Length: 296
Image: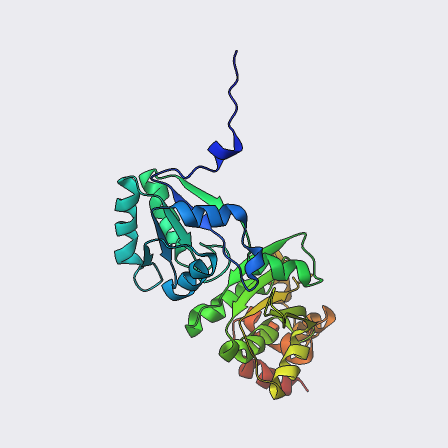
């Protein structure tokens, strides 16, 4: 049986009808790989989340390629247009604002469309803010989950936060500076002020900062300091797994006072223990306060 080998040049050749997910720097231009530069130089066109940012990057590299925008608010219209060009044999490089495409951006929708139509997709690996922050956090990397941006709608946000209550894996979240304080408050209210966390900003840039603290410590800092830059929040997982139905049933036999005391014994502060007990009993927190006062 004969075997054929593929040369490095053949492996790196741009193939028509292929979508290339090109990771771009999150701050330091030197992090762009040689392969990424080659792909950006040779594809038929570049689809960018922000053509201004990607245009500046290409200009710095001396690259001139046809560009079109592909972002959250035009993906339903632009996605099929890109698919048609790929089916016609054009090659396309997809770039997010910074970092790896398809992570917390509309690139995932384009990859899904390609998968449905049998269009080849390949990745040109590089920077990813989530993984960069995780490795710098000092928290466990054995198991982790990417949560991205928490929902804005109150009901969906509350539901997502409740899902995180018993998450034992390290959590990775993104947040904008003007929303950081509210998100820290929500996380601390759900997970406890003593939960270890790392706030990472300006990653790979001159003013890179990794603030290793607790959720409560972060809240205290930003009471007097204005958040600046985009943040990656790394939050330690909890030590308590989700209770089984039998465990929940057993706790429902406890008095309100005993129920709160149980949660305090797990390490939660008084306020968080009352909130957890009220949630499990299916009553408002204020009602549990009233029952506790009646027990005094």
